Length: 302
Image 1 (cartoon, rainbow, N blue to C red):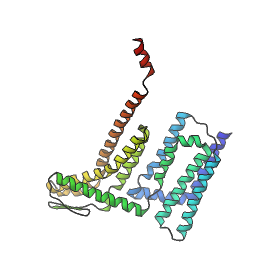
Image 2: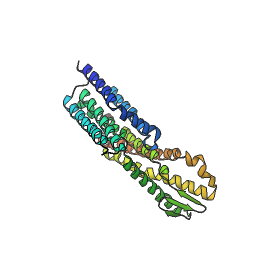
Image 3: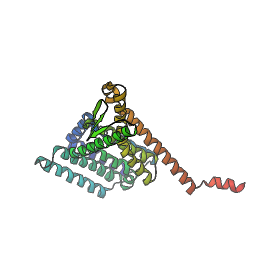
Image 4: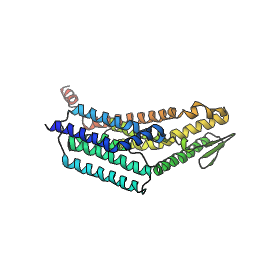
């Protein structure tokens, strides 16, 4: 009876969230479909649901109601949602900040529904996919612009360093690089924020799936941050060298306009290799700490 009540309650609360926050869901999907900086949002919900289902099948959990924790989170979601509605209606909040708060309220509501209907034990086991849902919250424009500016300036600095190391004469003015016969402007749309966000999100996911220790997971995620700049810096360096010494038409080629996926793939390969190495180190350390008892028995018999 408890199991039926859990599933039924979760279904009711989920349908209620769709009814209450449908404008928020529509606006967030529109951002994800039409603006590069929010493309990663399309991946978050399917990945979180898949991780929860994988854990559920592996452990075959029996849900138990945890109304107290659920009510607390649902109440918090309601407070955040009402605050966004009240202040947004008075034009105290910008539209993008209001949308972020409404999306945050929706995510908290889903967390509260999950905890309240399935219990604290299952929620703790699914802590990663539940918090992974926070990536659904679209960053406000003021924060997004700061990240884009950081990526632009970081890319310009690294590209200039690579050009100097390669012996290419280069002058830098802000986010503009001048090489012989060619001037490159690292504009806002060239900040590679979409691929950088995807790189960080995928790094978070890979570290969770294949690593066990907190320090190793944190290391992979931290490495993905400079990699976000490195991949774009190498891309600008490549375009500058090819444009200056081979063909200026390279700036109108697919390497410029669609080549970001190639450098993203190289960065992802670096993350995969790093994760694999750390996983092997963890396995080796675990083997030394917890040796196989059967191997000791065989050794004793010999």
